[in-house]
Length: 264
Ligand SMILES: C[S@@+](CC[C@H](N)C(=O)[O-])C[C@H]1O[C@@H](n2cnc3c(N)ncnc32)[C@H](O)[C@@H]1O
Image (cartoon, rainbow, N blue to C red; front, side, top):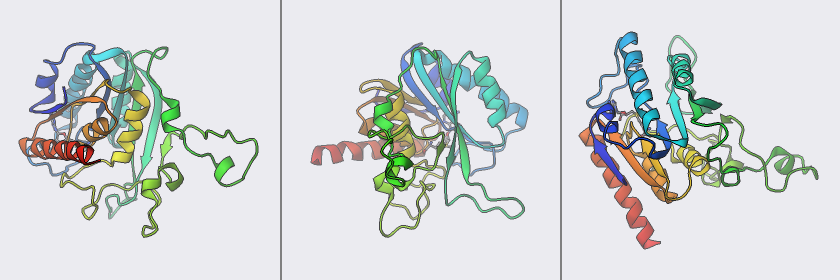
């Protein structure tokens, strides 16, 4: 609890008690040739999919009966992941598309500007969904001054652009970017990990699909974004990361959140 373990997630997950995790978020390597420090992101399609089936199953084992499971994945393998998640007996709640700016520029196809986030639950009748924690102002309120607008706003759409009115921290006078961008090299939030996700995306997921003191798991911790969001929101957390170097950076990131809390 409240730590990041170094090593292979399959081996580490085998030590996690069955049915103990309220929320799992997995952002695995996409098998598109990213440069990680120890992981090789160019496996054969068959090897990648066999490995994917193993870790999906391993995460499912540790989920509570009312748990939720989010998986981020690129276009190349999203269809295969959906088929495998369905086969595990989980129920899809949303196929979220996260649209970002500052994507990878391509030369002979359109630029990459989205990732898929498959949102599943163990039991569609019993699962945590804290609607009030993630409501956003509706266009009826912000644009049309419509008296029929629900005064508490609306639930976000399943295409996540996280517009400024949905997250004030991303609307700054000096910025022309209105959508949550990828975390690029010059950003203050950036830790140095090649595929760091923005905390705004993880904060929404942790806020809506877990409660304070619930255990949040990330089997591919990377720079520790999920764990940082979980810690800020008062959840317990467990991360697993293959690279000792990345895991050490995560520990520092989490310790800094502890320091900020003490100062506040
Ligand atoms: C896409 S990145 C995750 C980024 C993370 N979501 C973030 O916001 O920083 C995938 C991570 O999985 C790690 N990884 C690869 N194979 C692994 C394995 N078998 N067990 C645990 N971690 C692994 C890589 O080292 C990499 O840091």
